Image 1 (cartoon, helix red, strand yellow):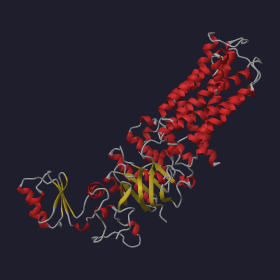
Image 2 (cartoon, one colour):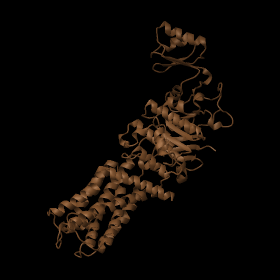
Image 3 (cartoon, chains in turn red, purple):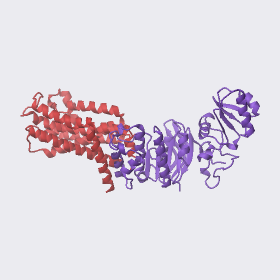
Image 4 (tube, helix red, strand yellow):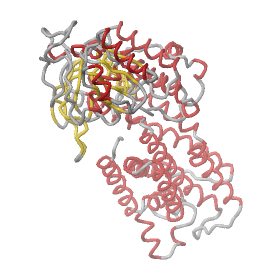
Length: 246
Length: 339
């Protein structure tokens, strides 16, 4: 009970601070919402053959984008500064244990993601998106991707200075947006780049979410599950090994 | 059983030895100041006690626990004020105290605590917008939320205004009355003198003295007079007048190796008067802690050779029996007990 009370108190402060940081709200809510709305109405992006409306391609893509923004970029930046400011050090002298702190961060990410999905779902429905299947696999892929991205975020936050983490997380965000099949379909990329993209966590995530929510135009790929599963195992392990609390 | 026990502690960072054989102890209801110049090893010692670092050698115990191995049993009873930071930049003072209150079991009321450190009017301001002194006050309050049995305050009065200093002193006194063992680091001698029951002076990772402020300020045998005057006095001529050795310790700071008898003092002032030299100050018998400190940490070279509380200890000789480890102690490596 005491452990739960500690985790929930920490989760609460993580949420309050995340929602108070302007750049984090911009990243986790505003950008996915604007991308979905703008490119659904302004049909300039390439969409895979067989896609009737841009929103059918974009909604699964921005779900992947939302997961990446929250679990990797926002987490990395916040944790990087907490580490630099001695917050992690100070919390280390309280009865809140490190596993409890990590549990709180995970819970906070899950809550933000639920809010993101809700907001984006309402928007997509308003834009005419319809689907009645595939939610379970999409959520499973997003959960697995959250673990992978959080591992990458913590790896940056725990090894680099805060400002470098800020730059690296934003840089990686840009690269993975472009190579992640979130806005531009993977099939539009040059062949060599596409191979690389499919091996990255962003590419495999959007592949899986697309496959789950699209009406059968793509079949769930076992390869993508493997790739994402490997990232979800390797990234947190590497982060746990390399993380420095001060 | 002492609350804090440090026995022959060594802390090394790669090739640098930050703490080199430090030993001391502290009891419940006792305020101990760890005093020393920058880089003396104060924070390294404190962080070992807080469980942030493992000793490279020696042992430390806090409340009978190993700060690293028994970390989870120690944290509920420990209050920590870091030298800087430790707070979310975007958090408000009350939120931060409420968070810490939620992770501790026995707690102070966060609002009342905020009032006690004079931050009630800033309760809704984010940490990054607080002044340096206000940040220090919050940091101090954070150390108190969990009603600690032992409190570690690292440079609590750094960057804080006089009223803040007074507040810190008052809170430390209250903690002592409540039976809390308080460990404070500082390089401010006045602060150490005012706040501490005992002062442990460290320099270059070693304990060079350990005693109450008044014990430390007593002069061995009172066989010296210290005074301040314009630099460059003719010490040989003055020495002749006084029939004693006179030394210019630092420019404008003089040491006369003679007893502070009325005659000697009169001779000294008369000699200065003849030359129309102003006297900045004159100390005899009792030294300011600053003199002790400078003597032990800087002037006498790498290992202080001046012994205090050694041999012919004058009146009020420090506790020589019973608690030998607690009396004033001559430096040496690791500090052997006083004579």
